[in-house]
Image (tube, one colour):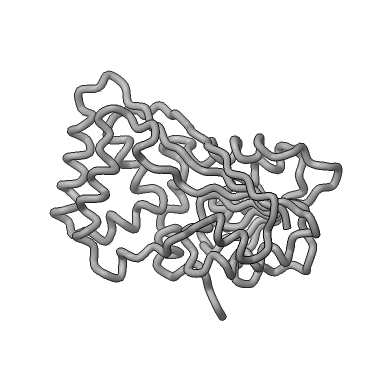
Length: 256
């Protein structure tokens, strides 16, 4: 079976499933912003959340009145989400287990850019959307946008990236506008989103990184370099009275 989410990514999300989005409500905050930016749902509107994770987008959508289904490639994530959203199942974006034209809206929070073939995923999403249906997805913005003074994350990631084994360095380039146009989506929009979340202390920033997809980066470093990254990250924030996690994202929407 073709899979667009690699085993390496799925293993990471299986490992972090229990702690995902628990240090601070990062993904759920962006999920609420995403859903709030969409048109109000018509009665009975059906929404599919692809790469649902712990339910950041799916649960916000249900609260707004959508009839929500969800899929994720991680069995551990699905097990966690199923406790609050029974209509979730394990599936890959390459083969969504739904008939054509099933959903009025499809969402995907911070996942499309991780897939090996975003065009294939978008074609499959378009298949399950009703004609004129809405796609909405987020991708990370630059770490330089709105970072906390002393937060050296961008600098450190750039520096330590060269120490990764070759098999861990490749994240497929993703051009959202080109990908959407390439599979026939129209009326594309892009919107800037940003969150500010208070962290307990500098160590909480490190714990946060260890509980989502960035865990793959740190697991690929040897123990000495991982410790060096940690020490330098925390030291940059050590003299600050409070630490705020500031991060940006791009919200893309398009019509099928």
